Image 1: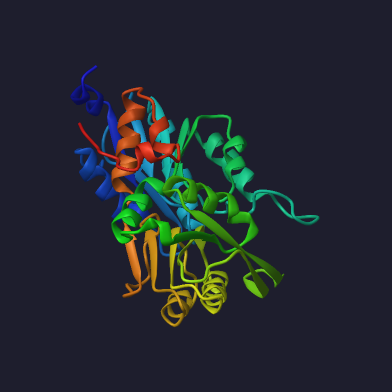
Image 2: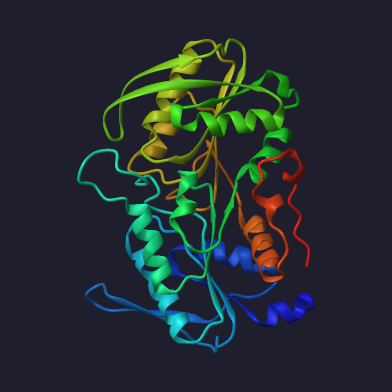
Length: 328
């Protein structure tokens, strides 16, 4: 089947919260977004609907599930509507998978919310999920359907290569023990070392203390993580690293949640630049924040899924795939 024939049976749709990104994905994919609307009632209830025939189509619904919970609900309703409209397959494209931090019981009598979300998506009718940089890799196992887990490294690494003429002076850093694996993977790609911060919390979103493990004297440090929420941990880590003699501190985060006054904290911190993707829209621009688009990566993933091609090179964190090129 030719690319044009495949596109005839492919339909891209967006929920309201991620339309800015869906439009970019559709532009790269060279197919306009499908026609849909969402009626809003006075009491806050809403009703999405497809305004074109999708019978027998492979329907891709693009939506990040960041707060509010209406974003998740709208995605579920769009999936249900597609199922009832006899879509051939329903692929949920979720650049940011919300509730991923609740991936296990870390104390008694709490939910495993990410498993609940996985169940809800499957019951609604999702036949495949495409997502990026899950907070915990094991969330893929919560699904009984295929999950294509993309990595932002293919976006970040080319940017870093252009940023540093001498990568030998670069060290990657993790703001906590949980992100050590991620920092180590980036270090392997560029052939550098990594250091780690160890933090202790008294309660969620509050860092009580932090220690640095490793030597950063005179080095350009790149802190990496998947999510930045309040900014407390990252700003504290940047401060500790600078106190230990680092030449510069940049931060590389996939999902810019940036709750409350997080942007203001970043602007007043030791961080020289915060590099993020557009999986979540920024509340406002900042001179310290650089946004890199994931649209080409998701467009290529959609193309490969539709043409039954391997997408291994898109989610393996290796040097070979850092320059993603999208061709149709």
